[in-house]
Image (tube, rainbow, N blue to C red; front, side, top):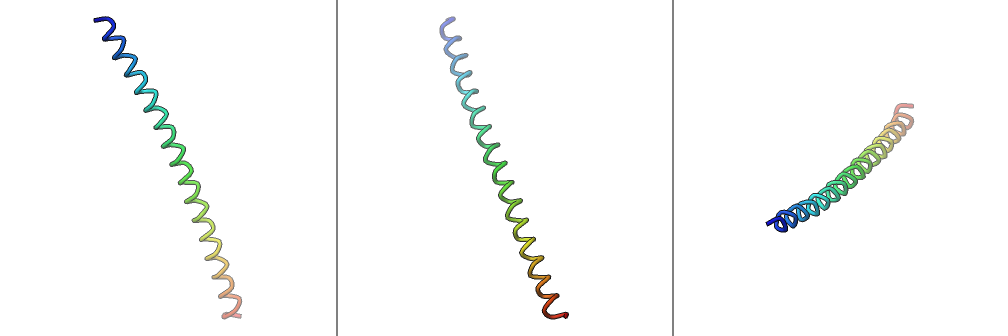
Length: 61
């Protein structure tokens, strides 16, 4: 009976270790996606500002 409990405990430990590694990977991917979203948003904003400035310089001069 003791062996059964030890086997179950070891299996749960292994499962939790795997789940922890998976959760860490998910967090890493999420962080990278957020960084990419920020970079893309910044680039779009900068391009939009450049286009607006060009419009103002060209048509309102």
